[in-house]
Image (tube, rainbow, N blue to C red; front, side, top):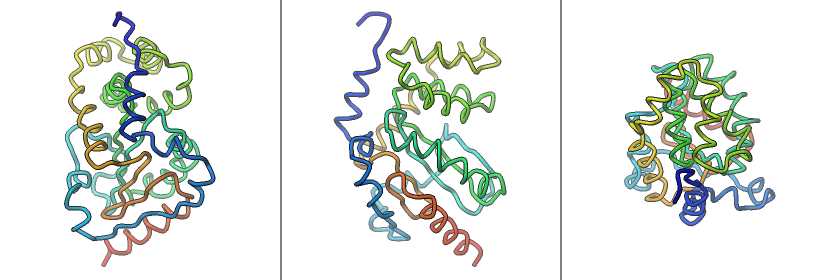
Length: 220
């Protein structure tokens, strides 16, 4: 493979293991989905407890001491993940994250070059901006070179970013997030709100109901 390493091999792998499972389903089937709430069922969670714990390299937005934690697994090649980030996440940020009620932890199973770029951008508190930048321009990305060219556009400290990206010091984290999704046969997007799971880009009201329940439990 030449220097311009094409990332579509990763996309093919993602499709094979189901990382972009929700992106491959028609819109109607997603709308008809209801949230899969697993509550405090530790038997069901026993195989994936690590998913609910804060991990090294996690991308965190909001109050570190928030009583409710929302963990997101998303892929930039998943249409429903794109819709969540465009339509739903901004509303949740305004209502729950900016007010200190909820802490968001984001983990991405996009191609490793993209994930490394996102984590490197977090070094100057621009991970969410980088995530949105990739979602908005995903159709322009055809190779690893495209990723770096696009990423550098929103970075202030380009020298530090280049060192971070080229060193691949976050490659293990990117690989671990993919491994977690593959091992648990998880589709994207998938969310964990404290010990409750929401599968797919559900309507805003579903997220609100689960968050409110978690806040109520946390205050008892």
